[in-house]
Length: 123
Image 1 (spheres, rainbow, N blue to C red):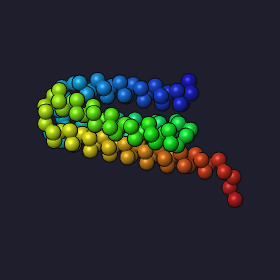
Image 2 (cartoon, rainbow, N blue to C red):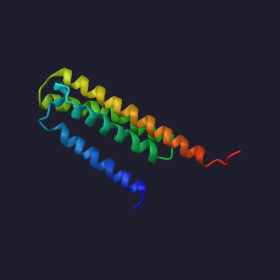
Image 3 (spheres, rainbow, N blue to C red):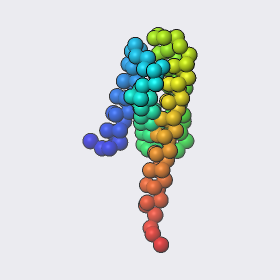
Image 4 (cartoon, rainbow, N blue to C red):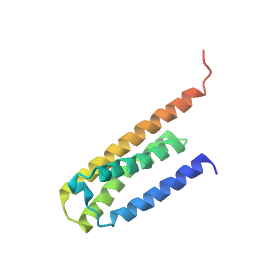
């Protein structure tokens, strides 16, 4: 199995897991739980990282990646509505989600640039 296929499968599993987590009863963000913060950042970093790395056309890669932010906000809104109704949780989780997206885009862009310029002959 190719690396790109594995990354797509991982991306789909994480996205489905994220939807499942949305409808769980956990409200760990309100307590400042480090695991919950790292969960949000790492999940959204992976969701942003994979499209940037896999799509050949940069505009498609960035469009897919940028679409993750409003989807994440809607999932957080659904989670807060179902669990606590506390708007503060929504803001904190959305902040951590967006931090993850920025990290994912940054890391994938650096790798993509290195791959692009790594193919050029040295002087």
